[in-house]
Length: 188
Length: 285
Image 1 (tube, each protein chain N blue to C red):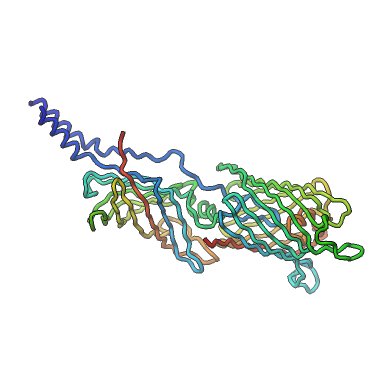
Image 2 (cartoon, each protein chain N blue to C red):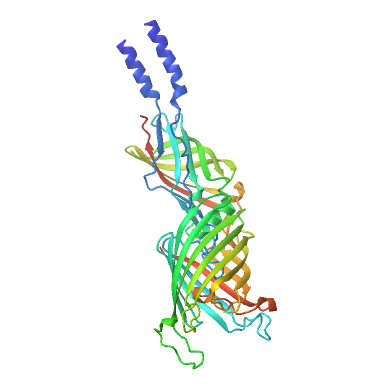
């Protein structure tokens, strides 16, 4: 009977996954950057939420991830331009969040604490969902991962009108830079 | 032993079904940004309830051409002369900003404080309420009859005002503002201090992200008023942190203590003059 319990415990230990949630107490930052004549356009928020789930150390087994960004809090650096951005371009009344959901398909250890990962999934912006692959770097420290990634989206792919600054249109390829932390979620 | 084995197999078989039961749930109430209705901190002369963001500066230069648009050989009045105002604002917090301005009309120096007191985020009727208070010092005043320069520190050179600013936005396109104002010593040439209680209002229609039209007026309810209630009609062009406002109106003054006291042209006689406001938001850190 003892052997039975040991077996059960071992199997449970082996298959139970780890779930990480965005650590909201950390210094998270999501940046939307586009080149524009005279001055770059930049929108910043710390309002990112979501999770990463996996079932072994490789990060790829049964991997699931979902991260969303609250666009209502996007700060363009000029307060009075924020509403303009929310109402006229992102239409946050209809689409308050942008999200990326998918899974990690490749994880490669660089050293003891750093991992290069490639994820595959879909990104949702402004009512449009598109498939995308994202490369990221994950730095493991105790029960947290620090995640850094950047990738490019084309505004016209998501039916977003190209904003103007000083009569010049900004670059329609927008660079998204994410720098945030996830923390191991412990079920009670 | 056989029963235990069956249980074991069943457990192993069912584990994957539960293993990916994600605990994360989206937050029910999502953080919202501040309510921003009008894009600019001023309509034409009257304030909106908007404030700058903390540590932002705003520079303003405004002109009111004295000659009317139909004046002979004055190129719609642009040949001048003009009343000129320059001002610099700074936001101490996201809800509190101060402005120091100067106009060449009586060399009026203006200092004001605006506080965004209340915001109500609502899809149909959002509301912003701000309070503004300020004082003005007229530093170059000549007595009307004797033409003698008045003493700088003469109490009659000082004016004070307070304003409540109510803003809303309907159908996400039409901004509406109401600005009841009280001005103390509205007539600086009067022997006894005069006051003016006025009800200002403006409507701004946002045609696109860049262009909007507006009309602004300020009616004197009680107290002293110059010849007419001021009115201005124009267009606003917004590009990044710049606002260009071009309009026609019947007042040639801009500083609040002067504008609240009324306009000098009768629009019923077709008397209009050109004016513009240019503001630029600056952020250094």
